[in-house]
Length: 207
Image 1 (cartoon, rainbow, N blue to C red):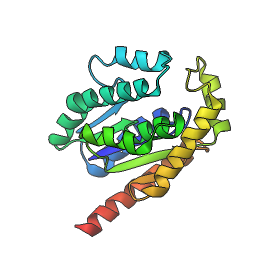
Image 2: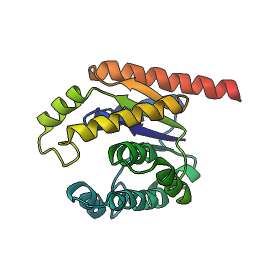
Image 3: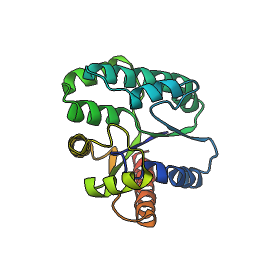
């Protein structure tokens, strides 16, 4: 099973990732669960992550190809081996991030970006949690954390990306499950548990 966590910076994905892994282990009764992230969630990926986050690129396609390159290695070295072994992968960010950030954020053509993703033959997630948070709440959280990166500092960019996530959810509500991430951690965790239970129920009814 492949689960992805999506949302703008400051939405709380990282804070909830370990809780989701714990819930998944409990529901599926397995320890074969790996928690990973993008960019850089593979052995040797730290330098590429640093390049993507810290660099300014004049051409928006440069950023896209770096993200796709990172994902190809992430899939080959981390995600696919676990899935082939019957395990469960939980990844912070994946293809939906690329669409939200590069299509809505950087204004690249959606058809072309989807073509590149399809050419890479990357596995599709079974379930995606979209952490929907207001820009105001996200920025407040990011400012408390300090050292905001170039993407986090661009409010107009964050607004476009947030709209991208909303449109992706509206197009695919079965896979992408909206989580109201404006509340406290307990409120978010209750929603996550409920959505996981709904997913299990749907899967059982289809078999």
